[in-house]
Image (cartoon, rainbow, N blue to C red; front, side, top):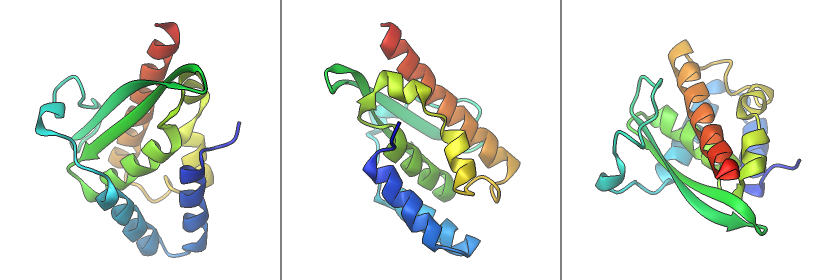
Length: 143
């Protein structure tokens, strides 16, 4: 299963950056480019549990390639985490729910070397975000 072009572009850009500080800066830039959520969307239902920083993910049902799919929007109050949200949105948004549920972002992040320099707390938060997105997709497939 191929990855979305937006995610592939991020992966290609990361491959050019050798220095971890450069990678952090790139993640921060990606996060800063995300549109902010509306205040009304920062609800307990949209908040991701398991993240030390505050993270909200909004799932929007849509039809993709004639199948049930999802688009996602998200935000965090921490700059690096906001960048991780941006990478996850590039990977998961606007895809059929079955593909979303089957895509292991953690393995892809490991391939890109994105988790090796994250703190344990940030890594755990990343896993919580991925689990939330995949659960939303499973619910969409089943419902």
